[in-house]
Every structure is written in structure tokens, then in C-alpha cells.
Length: 163
Image 1 (cartoon, rainbow, N blue to C red):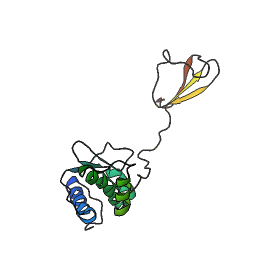
Image 2: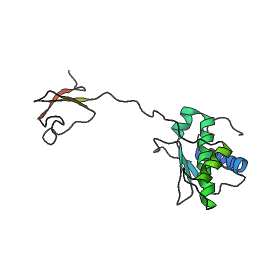
Image 3: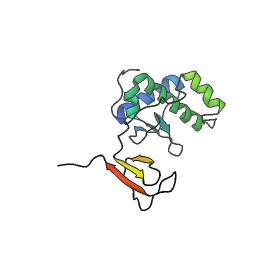
Image 4: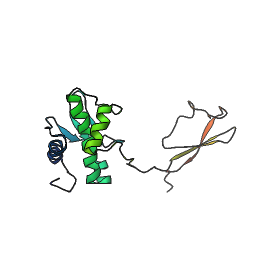
């Protein structure tokens, strides 16, 4: 690859994808690719209807250029196989053979995008004393204890400003 740093914008990403397509697949990439900040659990995806590719910038920054290149190869396998009318799905023999041939990533590595927040609200059952920790406030007139169906009571609001 000509540039060893992760492309920061869609134009640079497009250049990288076109370069990888020509180098490993010997075919041009003729559609669009972009970063999609809404991707949470994957490094990228191939859109069947538009034939566009989308990639997760946070994933690329977390794992670096080699992982981004492997993800691009994976999505280009979907792209080139689908356009040629061959098996482009993950379980298809054509897909697995091409993926192995070009050295693409089989699976996306797990990424911790945001840390777990501490629960804000603590509810307790008035009958069995079961406690429930929740991020959001719940309407205790609509919800009951899952263990004994008793009444829930807000025990502690962890973010009450005392002052």
C-alpha cells in the first residue's frame, strides 16, 4: 500500500479500496465506499442494492492498517463475487476460497466501542428484597419484580445532587 496510515476521509479510503481491488482482485472497484459511524459490531459491510462499501473508522483506528486492509479484502470478496454472479455469502465455497486466496479477514475482531456505565438507579422489591440496577428510570406502577411479582421501590438515585 502506498500509505501506511489509516485514511481519515472517504476520498482517501476510496483510493485505498481501488488500489486493493486492482492489486488483489485484478478488477476495478467502480462504486462508492465511505466511513459509516453507525456501524457498531463490524469492521465493514457490502450493500447489495447499491454495491457500495461502508467501513467503521473506529474499528480501523482500534486495530490499525493491517486489520483495515483485511476488512477491505473481505468486503471486496462480497463485491466482486456478487457482481460476477457467484456465491458471495459467508457460507459459500466461492466466497471462502477467494477470501483465503487474497488473505482477507474471516471474522471481525470484537471491539469495545464504549465502556459500561455505572447504573444510575437502584430498585428493590418490597416483598422479596430483590435488587435491580438500571441505567434509566422506570415507572414502578407499570413494572413489578420478576422474581415474585412484588411492588418495586426506588431505593437509591445514584446521581442525586446533594447541595
